[in-house]
Amino acid sequence: MELQKRTWAEISLDNIEHNYRTIKAHLPAGCRFLGVVKADAYGHGAVRVSRRLEEAGADYLAVSCLDEALELRNAGIKMPVLILGHTPARFVPVLIDRDITQTVTCLAKAEEYSQEAVKYGKELKTHMKLDTGMSRLGFLCSGSLFDEGVEHVITSCRLPGLIAEGVYTHFAVADEPGEENEKYTLEQFDLFCRMIAAVEERGGITFPLRHCANTGAVLNYPQTALDMVRPGLLLYGYGDGGRLGLKPCMKIVTTVSTIKIHEKDTDVSYGRLFRTKRTTRMGVLPIGYADGLLRSLSNRCSFATEDGPAPQLGRICMDMCMVDLTDLPGVNIDSRIEIFGPNNSLEKLSEAAGTIPYELMCSVSKRVPRVYGDERD
Image 1 (spheres, rainbow, N blue to C red):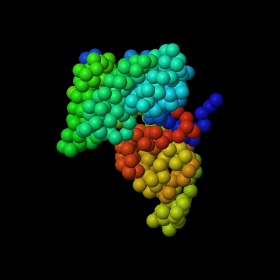
Image 2 (image 1 turned 120 degrees about the vertical axis):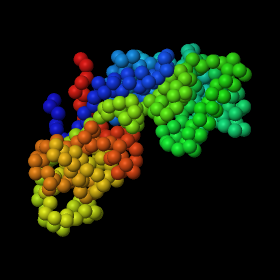
Image 3 (image 1 turned 135 degrees about the vertical axis):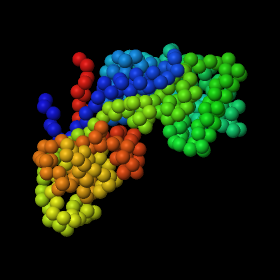
Image 4 (image 1 turned 45 degrees about the vertical axis):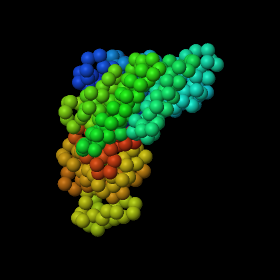
């Protein structure tokens, strides 16, 4: 079926592979690469991105939940997949049968997984997660809880039906500049390493895979690479500040659907947030917040045309928004408009929205078709 040229996302799998190989070359010899493909690979399409990473030789994938893991398995992705979030224990047979690795975040969950695995008569592959300062998920182990944390991890690893393949933690501010953030990150890393050493010394348990380096740590703390790294934003071409030569992999494109000439002092869109200051040639674009263009960007951004930037006017609506084409006479009906991509910075757009690039990429909705111009047969 012919694609309706309303609004679409152009995804470059070649750039995904370029970024993978570039990051991989930046790592110590033997360090494995886990591609984070949760949230539909940050909006890029988890199945296609995972398939390209599998073909390119990546070692592991990470998703948020069981549904995301099953999507990959159902699509024929065979490489190891780690679920970073919680999975109810009743799904242990599914995890085992589909060869999916489950994160364990505390002793109680380990006991539940063990019980279900033993009942099923098979073993579940797991990675233990340590909470070293994110205060979200993981075995508590800081301060006075260190010894108890060590014992809980040892007990969890020894439970029947569980294979403790890996251990990991998550840095809170590895991508943030400043001495305090550096100090906090290094303290997290030190606690992580001390926990692993204590578990090995007291329990005789060695983890084949130790991983903690997210995007920020891959760039700023090479000593944290250990056995495997987990870059997310880096894989999709952002977050390196140009240091590695990564390439953005997503471009959001729309077209001009309508052009109208408004007189001076004409109110535009909901809330009358914008009033024309001159006779204005205004274009209507078929993209709005239902497509992922955040309403918070209203009156605060511009988009790229072949003739230059087109300022966005008035409040962004559910299905459309308006732009000023007065100084762009060459832009007409059906002209292409780049919302973000190589000609309109995602970083600047996210700053204007008061958010981060992650959110804008993940916000691109399912009704925006993904077009893969460089997908292999």
